[in-house]
Length: 248
Length: 257
Image 1 (cartoon, chains in turn purple, yellow):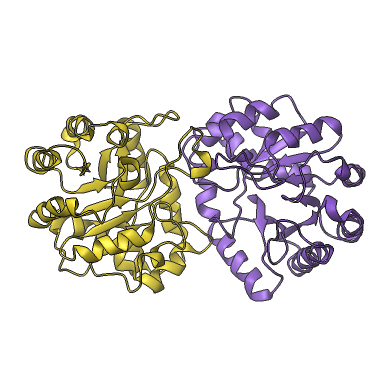
Image 2 (cartoon, chains in turn cyan, purple; image 1 turned 180 degrees about the horizontal axis):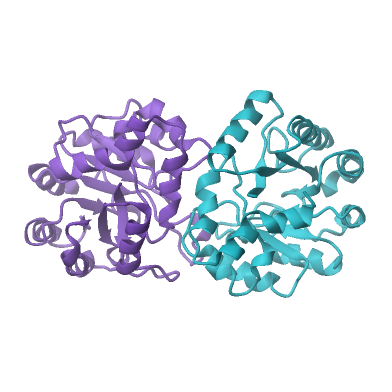
């Protein structure tokens, strides 16, 4: 089974969801872990946008329960709403994970209630991260922020998005934080990414992800399918690992 | 398939694959021929050193590899380098790096180069960039070339085929629509969930070229991009092979690109 661990939906309209699924079908992807960063991708979303994002993902996951695995967008700036959405969509709904983006650093202590609830629900947290040579956004996490959070909450399952855009270093940073996995989404399909990551972390800690629709399912998957690795490792990265974490 | 955009040589910032891996990948993925240019020439002060090494490397494989010359038109005696590459080494086209080599495509000094290219029907490739600027972990940055400049360049030299290489999704239209007849682009870095599905109806399949950007990208990325695109079989064939073959083999700028 192939599971894309990192997909965004732009809204919950049927036409959009069907286009996403049609493109995923062409790349032979069985399930997609979806999140919404609100319809406007605001750097600092309002409480209403957090709620809207959760509702879009809930609607999509309800419409296509066999294809979409939903993630709840949370923000430390709107803790009460974030926790409410986690209750509604994960504790009492079909969603399976929490999504963090750039409105706070991943090790912001204000997120502790989110992490504690995620641990109680056995819901992994997908945390955006990048180390940009051009400079990060105001509160955009690096792999160091994510590992700090992971060390403070050793029972938390946290997955580092985009290998921080700097796979040569991110694998070293997360190596000794066993509760951190990494997705391979985003960026250009540079050669040798997976082989480099595997020098420091096991294949059981890597998830295939695309970052569609901004990126291509098929192109991003080739980071795994073109890698010089064994078939068992390839299957783990393409879906088995994230399936185990999410219980899907 | 015909890869319009492969390169050979070391890369300063990470290990990359070489000639043997290029040929093995071509065999594995069904790529019959590839245009190759020197990656060293991007970083050498004198790119001709890279061109000469490339000519030697490609010589035993000319049935599959089509060498193009990297020319730096703000470097002394570049005209002689061009003639040597096209005549002595039988290279079939030119690659320009305005951002790495710090010149403007609109500089009149490019006139002699373009005249020579036109006389010899050599296509001229313009590489918009080679690296995601967010991953340029060094004190200076090399931003991508503005697509608008490539459009103006192609319009200034209508009798020479210009190939924009490395354009991102949303950039071909920035070259100015309608695109001039002599301008086409490779799809190596053109990516989104529905990239080719967007580009084909808007720009025409006859001006889109399959390119891998080997060795910086994995070769399979663009093979699978094309394989999985929801486009017609005829359009897929044009992009995969026919357009590049027409440009490289007939090199007729007046033909439909």
